[in-house]
Amino acid sequence: MKRDTILTLKLPRGDRLEDYAVREPSRFERPKAPFTRKALAAAHVVADPLSAKEPWLEAAVDWDATLAYRRHLWSWGFGVAEAMDTAQRGMGLDWPSSLLLIEKTVRESRTIPGAEVWSGAGTDHVSETDLNGVIAAYEEQCAAIEKLGGRIILMASRALAACARSPDDYARVYDCILSQVKQPVIIHWLGEMFDPALEGYWGNRDHYAAMDTCLSVLQTNKQKVDGIKISLLDKDKEIAMRRKLPKGVRMYTGDDFNFAELIEGDAQGYSDALLGILDSIAPAASQALSFLGINEKSQYHEVLAPTVPLSRHIFCAPTRFYKTGVVFMAWLNGHQDHFVMVGGQQSARNVLHLAELFRLADAAGLLADPPLACGRMKQLLTIHGCS
Image (cartoon, rainbow, N blue to C red; front, side):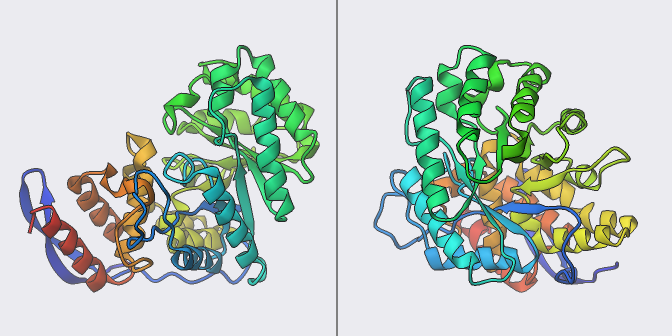
């Protein structure tokens, strides 16, 4: 659909400023029926910019704005993946703050029919330990989430990666935890491109060898596993693993580079989604999934195709800084009044990166209020001496 130019502003490219024409936003409709793919958004938290806490040392969260953003995601048909390793943990939130976030989100979800929440359980409240300590740490977090009535995403453990000496050590830990959980969980295999401390997870640096160990764990515990999310940013590895999963175990794509084709799938299956990018592209992704649900695949790709370059830019290396782009998008679109992040992470990307993000968001039709977005972009450029 042709979109008319409605505003212009100057954006930096390299060492100069150039005119950029901003177009009217695309129009997206909220879903009228459930999606044919399960779709969970790893949602960001909104920082409290007026807190007296030191941002590099303590998390200060604006709870009202944070919960409002979850209502925004639910309204577009998405479930929320809460307190995830790539969304908050290791990005400024400790376990006590994460548990409070889980409690508030689970409680809020009960006020909205059909709202779904899955919450991350890990071992981030311990550092150096042995396998028994890893098991105890997982047990503590799982029990706390279950006590709140929450569903568990079993996250990868830095502590396990540090102390495990073989694939059998991983199997021992996961078998123990999965034997105890009350409801089936989602397992998250997070690649080293998101967290360098997780290199060699499942006991092998070779992803295909590691995959075999993971698949063995899934087969042994398939009654306790809803699905697995892999975040390796390699579609071929995801497809290879998807085709080997035990019957009834879902593949949740964590591939923010190739999600469109992985969600569509092929003759042998498809991926559901647990993605950080859904936080930023919720209206477009919702519209696309609605088209996919009625087998309008050309329209699915027409809507989703321009979001892929945006996602690849937000998640470009160093990928662990992707949350800065997610929060920047939320600020441009008026979901929060400031561009301040937990942990001071707003400084993790440079102004050229953010200017290109602005262009790509406009190309995808995702600047919902162009005058507001342009005004905020100008504020940022002025701070950086680019006006």
